[in-house]
Length: 362
Ligand code: PMP
Picture: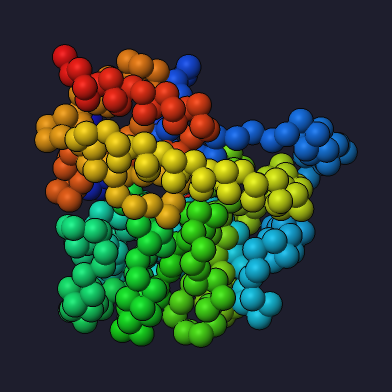
């Protein structure tokens, strides 16, 4: 191995593999929790009109003021709270870590949870503590959580609400107990907000250490890369200092502002996805050997017969369907697959393929 590289790149970085996105060309894409619907043609035309005359020779508005105003309007952000924009909520997770990282500082979350909390902790040389969820239903083990908070004194606590990859939404009272026990910041990550009726957005400001993080990715704008963090303005002003000046590009600012002004279109799509989630859940429940877990997100985690996750993943791919195999990702996810809710015909194809594979394994 290149000696200089081995000496310079931190061992924990060398041990990583770069974030891998599987090739999905020609496949029904049910692996990444995207909204499967594109825009109606009339909206596409109006959007293109809104881009006309943009001055791409100029840097974008560093604060994204028009976009912030559109978000405030569309997303019921409390007037007295601050908003910070990120290049996806992934960037916001990173900005938070950058603002607080110091030797011995810790990030705490639940396991299995969203992998970027751990990854970004590692990038920022922070320690990561994952408190296991309860095996039966992936709920929070509150005594274990409170004990870990007391022992580890984490600077940041991330909780996805609903959780990825399990799809369930944690008990709101558990989150309140955690917020009240935390010595540092608690970030409630509401990436899947379009698919649940519960939210902490209306509660920011009730505790000085609560921030709510959202993204437009799951509502149907994953390609724009836009996340937003909501909380007390004094916290956000500090985190804003580690943000690169022009992190939200001109096209994203204009396109997201336009999209938010037509939010009803996206609401209709996410409602359709919610209805499909129920239908898919029912269909999966009918397939012998599958044990789907309840979901308040746009995906369903399902347990499959022992040892068959890999074969089912491969069989589905053969049938033209890409999903996520989580077997081996965490002990609580053994024999688990994660299925993004797609369009009705995509879900029907998934159910047909799973039925065929489970009835007639080769
Ligand atoms: N939080 C959670 C819980 C997620 O599942 C994801 C994406 N899978 C993100 C944040 C990141 O979303 P984005 O960077 O697209 O805003």
